[in-house]
Length: 199
Length: 199
Length: 199
Image (tube, rainbow over all chains, first blue to last red):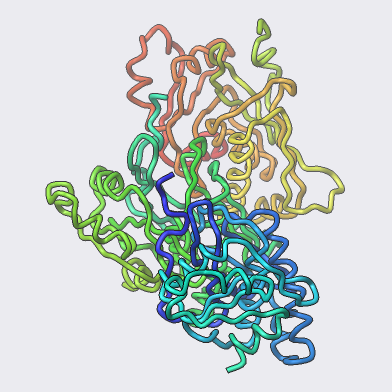
């Protein structure tokens, strides 16, 4: 109690390949968080995925889903990047390391971190996202829209990505809460890919 | 109760490669502790990591993060040392063995112990550190700055490394508490590398 | 309650290779105990370590630390013995099997049992030891010095090995308690090796 759930929301000036900002809901309000994906240099555990960051069961399953979806998503579009995922031991971490995190809404953030890493390409700057992803890439609605909007503005985010299913809830928020934000609403993951990595 | 959390804070006169002094916070105040990293001679479990020392979940995850980060950090800078980590079964222990330890703030100490071991190089003497590390090497702020300063002085440490995010808190401490200490504040791990192993 | 913590303290007349007497502290007073190490014939789990004897978390971690340290200790000094540890499935048992045991102070006893087994050499007779061992072989102080001295005398031990950090406590004990004992105080494990296996 009394401790911010995510200390120092924004600690990257620009994010390297593999790092993507997500929007999270916590009992103390909204927060931005980073999903960090990295290869484990020299590991022979090809195709494996390690997760850290005090992730709960649902979050860890989201990472497993993201791992499968990202590999399938790249298989046709970018075989070289797909081979990076298949041929690497991967590690996903979500700072801060002592803060328990759970829920499915980081699904699209996890997928994007893995794609960004595999492609060696940074995500568009000042963009943050939230949304559950299914194994075939459908994006499902999430909770805490208002809190996440506040967190995005607090961290200087400009482009926010929400599930199509949260559009009405977003549009009902007062204009003063959303000032300066460019919202996008997506129903399938490929729309996020275009926004975040299609540049 | 009544037992010091870390018996005999300083039991190395000079630390061999693989051993690094960290600053810890405990319910009874600050303490110095050592992180000890060693290869397991003759083991065929290449790339594995064993941890001991009654480490809690967050501490064990910190070791996993440090393991991945250290391998990636060395991959470009020192391929021979990177190969040591990839080709060895590693063991990290944190004495005293009966004292439960947890939290993310040993992250930078764990990374440094692994780098020191891989490079076969001792850390600069009279240096102690504290700081959470993310998977890409960002250093995040920690708690218990005052208690850790007191512990550092009690153990005869000269150079202390804190996260940049704790600078203000450090500077507000009374001058008499900090006498004789040379503080460094870092935002990314490579700054610690220069301080501890760049000599 | 009412059951002696370690039934029949001394049940070896002379100890075979792999068996070493330790000094333990229990809620009912001091006790001697044996650490027994053996190879598991025909096992293909090379490099593995099984432990039995109702050992608590800290005791089991002590065995893991001892396993790593013993392998590294022998790597240079006795490559043939190091190969025994690397190439065998090992089993460490601490009788009596129904008595729960915990704590880090059997560290040096565990190391010595593994070295004795690997070298095929019995430990010097009438010697018992106590001390926590770190991953690099520092010997840390333990509790219950007085109780362990009484137990050593009760079991007919002549040579007792204590950590250097317990020297003052030992020297303060009344002379009548220590009569007939030859104490040694050690700061690093190699001193125990000389005493127990250097003959």
